[in-house]
Amino acid sequence: MAVLVTGGAGYIGSHTCVQLLEAGYEIVVLDNLSNSKMEAVKRIRELAGKDFDFIKGDILDGELLDDLFKKYDIDSVIHFAGLKAVGESVSIPLRYYQNNVGGSMSLFESMKKNGVKNIVFSSSATVYGMTDKMPLREDDPLGALNPYGRTKLMIEDILRDIYASDNSWNVILLRYFNPVGAHPSGRIGEDPNGIPNNLMPFISQVAVGKLKELSVFGNDYPTPDGTCIRDYIHVMDLADGHLKALEKLSENPGAVAYNLGTGKGSSVLEMVAAFGEATGISIPYRIADRRPGDAPVSYADPSRAAEELGWTATRDVIDMCRDLWTWQSQNPDGYGE
Image (tube, rainbow, N blue to C red; front, side, top):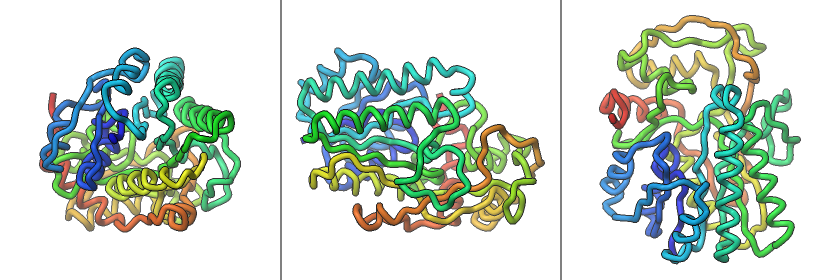
């Protein structure tokens, strides 16, 4: 039996593929390489010391999906594939809805047709929208603030509706908080296209000399140092969470959501200081205007994942910063062309 990993060449997908292979799973990876590189696939094989089939293709291609399910003995799907930049989603919402929601519907239709009913879906804390109530729990009200977040929420709703119509499906929705860091080897990591959208890749590109300074968006939030607080989670902890979720599918859990976070918030300036502590590099920054839609504080209550999946985050912000710098310093241009 194999696990189909959509978007498996991407940032979180690549780290999860390494963990899956090391845990003895057989995987098949599908990725259109729109936001990832073939070099990542090569390095997954190198790190795990195992081979797997990689298919360059799109989840919008229903015929290709049907062929995959017929060719391979696929038992479960981990679904990462999707566009993921919040700002870009505001500029080109139709592309996000077509790709993320349309592609997911194409995948689910093919799964149904081919009798594959086990799925772990890569969701996001953006489904919680704007709220002052912290920490965020899985049963809190949902309401995304941007097209990217709305695509995640729509896909969650679609999966819940599929389960309601046929409860032989097993659906786990993993709501990530803020993934950072890299594989400790430095061989795989986050390789954003263009100027990074997220804090830590931005910091590491300043450290490596590709960017002049960090822009800190707002220092007048109602937080101890005035900057936004987020729940940063090491990508290796996140990858471990997917393995725990995959194991949980065998217990027929139904359709259930889990937060994957540390349960602790760190401000932007605290992360800048942690990077300096972990690497010895001081990051120049300037205060810029707030970004619209940024919540002052967001962090998880991860207790359900601890109780039901047996999963907790074990790496701290120093680990995250150190492993991020190992990756960035060894790969100043990411995976290259």
